[in-house]
Image (cartoon, rainbow, N blue to C red):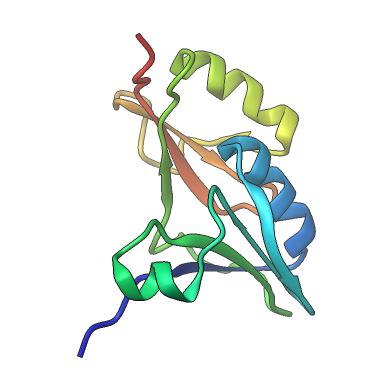
Length: 129
């Protein structure tokens, strides 16, 4: 028996808004949408691709009625590849993100941010040349 990690589901109030924001951050595009769901990715998964090998999972934003009540148990890490970490952190508020220390201090190799619905993510040290 073999399974594949194909989607990372993110509960939210506004899947369209959150998907649009993450598309800008990650340079992804919407690859599927249905009632209350928006899936984004850098590739369009096919049944053949998924069956053949493990591919990168795609974020799937799903509308739910309840709000977030506690700290995320799972979060995304993003790493700038064509600019500085500081430049990425400076540009993210224009996409709806906010900077937060989330009670973890600022002496780390990353910056904690929150997306437009408050889901925390980390901006890691850049890999830019």
